[in-house]
Image (cartoon, rainbow, N blue to C red; front, side):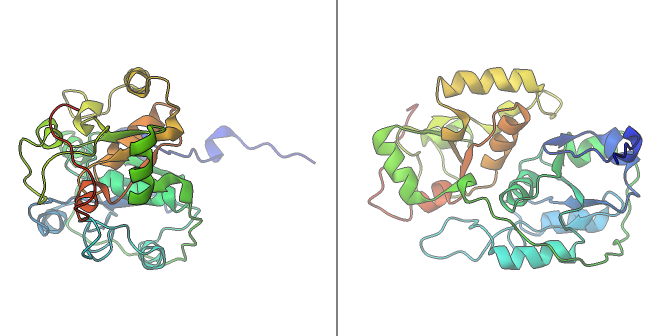
Length: 294
């Protein structure tokens, strides 16, 4: 016997972006978990202080250095990927399992929160979306905020890792030689060119990488461009390369996730992340460095 359920009883899954109206309607839905990812690269405690001063009701806080990264080693980048077992325990402690719709947000147009979006996708959890416009839009629309910490019922998160979503430095070294993949660098133009380098010891970029600043995914109001516009932009950049032959990088594997998300939202699926990114690349002095436009 077949059973048919009314559409309003079938939960919709959000996998890339979500708007403030939709989140507001689900704030009290126990199947939804919201995570605040506010963070400043130049002030590691600023995000946590901002969360304590006010956040979207029911929100947990995820710290980029402490929760979404591993310890730095002499040969790693500034934000190594977290140990899957460790992050899985944290996800469960935040009330996240495979049945939950997760929403992530920050106050930097998705630059930080997209890291958790990508990590959950890497862990095999598709039901995760970035709040378009972030906390700034939520507050601007005079939606509710609180200083209360949520009551969380821990669950068990069992990751199903997708190894094809990431590549390591050795893989990038090889594709730089044979041009089989397109490496996209999400950093600002002046960092890509090597004019300045405020965070890492060496300035420049990986030879052959093209500059795709993550801010270009956004409109003047700080929200993502329409999917069709993003699709046209990235297809032009790919120039015949298939989406699964795109490798995204940045300074430390954080803002590069913004570009992965933009491609996914545009229907261009399968792009890979070089999580170590520039800060890992330069730990080996034998790896080539380029400066200028290309």
